[in-house]
Length: 579
Ligand code: ARG
Image 1: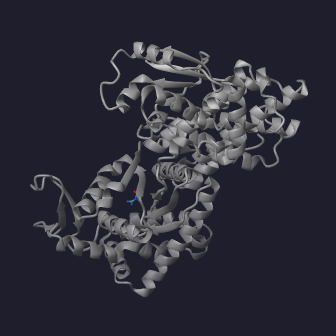
Image 2: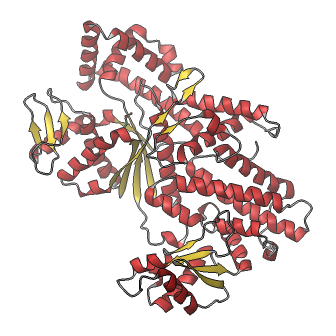
Image 3: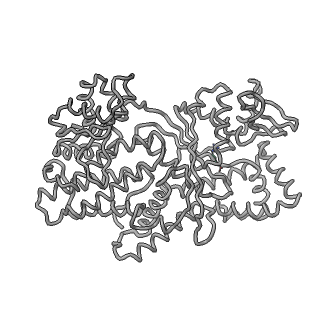
């Protein structure tokens, strides 16, 4: 019996009574969340949702009465040990020993795929997804928006992979534009080849700041324009300087992303689409979508009434392309190259209009797949500062969180001696950062606080890491659990049942996050799991218990740790084994 088949078993009984296909019922049966008030039932059928599912008025409106009547018509069996009616729900309790046995077996058997193999996903077709995220601009600041994009995009990609989809992770760099004209000129006056090699991101940024100050004078401006024109005309010398800036920057990005546990399949960027953007302009013209303004710029009319009330500018008056034109070219190119089923762009919400326009133009161009493009946007974060001041590089944030965490760890008495405290501090610190960011809806803005993020108690990433490390050391201390000889009758205490009931819900949580791409469902699930495991850890000791009891408890803790680790990894957190 698989955990998911509880839902199936209930659905098949219901289907006979209600005369509805079991597939229609499966999604109306949900595992009951473990709340503070302990509950007995494990699954719940919502009457309202089956009324929606069925074709009409086969069920009257009195939900409570309906629930009662339905409950009376259902029978207990070897799987379901009790059936009761609640307000608008029918509640099912699974045979206690079967519950324990099944959940433990399933977690054991599916390992990192636990939850992802559930029947909730059986009707979801496997897809190929392009996820574009992070996308910083070379020589400019890596701001908090880029950090958010990095962790959110990584989460979405991880989740899709876990659910069996194929994912292409793309980093679309800001690697073209006037900033390279300035950099080209700036490097001649302020550049240093050694520094460029040793820390390209920092050095290019410095050069860029310096040349920007200098660019107030007309002469520098002209030189920068000339350099950029040379780039656009493929002047070999100019291109090779640009190439070096780009290559060295990417090398460093890769190294830093690695600290975050993030990788990309493709580093592309605006530079790739210079020529292709011209082809796009040609296509727009051929399709009669390109209009010229008096100033000579090229626009596309996006208004419904075609009265130019909403337009998007796609061409400068000198015929060169813009950000959106390059995005049009990039989208078309990605479709040709990857034939994706869905494409996701992750940026802050200030770019929402940009992406809406992008998708609208693609649609006007006749690309139906524009409907399968999605902009996942997120809110602004205020107040992230490091001790050195403003955040300029991703590395600043990583170093700051690591040093703050290290300091917290050394000042706490409970901290154990760990083999590599610096690495542990980094992983725990990153967990803190990610959980703080993922706790709410992505679209909400929030005020960043190091203190709040790094608290060891409460709903933080530190708490998740701590719980994981504790459960891990429990297994270390008592040897690994063996599932084969578990006596599940030893797992009948309310605190053990709560953990099992919570584990039963993991697939539903994955399903919700896969629907709205919000990490918060998984975050709150893992926080609850950690709280429940912490309570069970206290009330259900392994040490000093009879061998069969100890063994059964170890199995329970092993299952909790395994699901905790799975969920943390999806969020982009590397679980630590000591701290
Ligand atoms: N480089 C841009 C920025 O920093 C983000 C790119 C987003 N992706 C895109 N396809 N336009 O604002």
